[in-house]
Image (cartoon, rainbow, N blue to C red; front, side, top):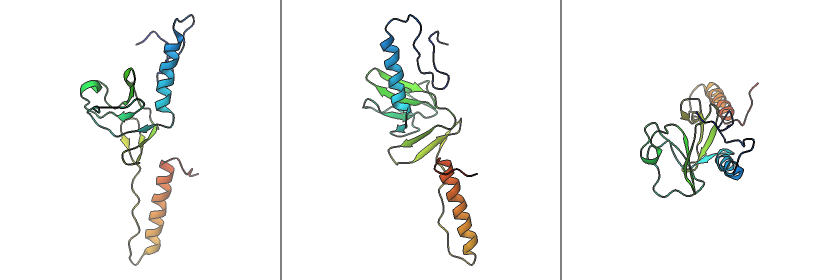
Length: 150
């Protein structure tokens, strides 16, 4: 456990009274916020760190990370000019994966995408199929935070 003050949700560093070099703490917090506000990830979850990351890129770390990511399973890995920074996700957090545009939600244990919506198939009971698809669409929009069902 650290003696430095941190925020409760994402462990962002806070300034301390009479702290020297406050700019270091402030800049670290801004770096982490830059990755966490409207978060996008390059890919993942994956276990192997990329060979040539660019500053500001973020990945979802897999369950059995290797190399520089060893010991950081399930975190978000942010590459900065100072090296890797890791942030533990919180339940309800959403990210957009840039490699395929998929929106993922963290349920407290795993990242998952909302279920795909099946197109209605022909048949004698089209009304029942249409209602099922509309229900799935409402669930999907709700899972993405685009629709509030009351």
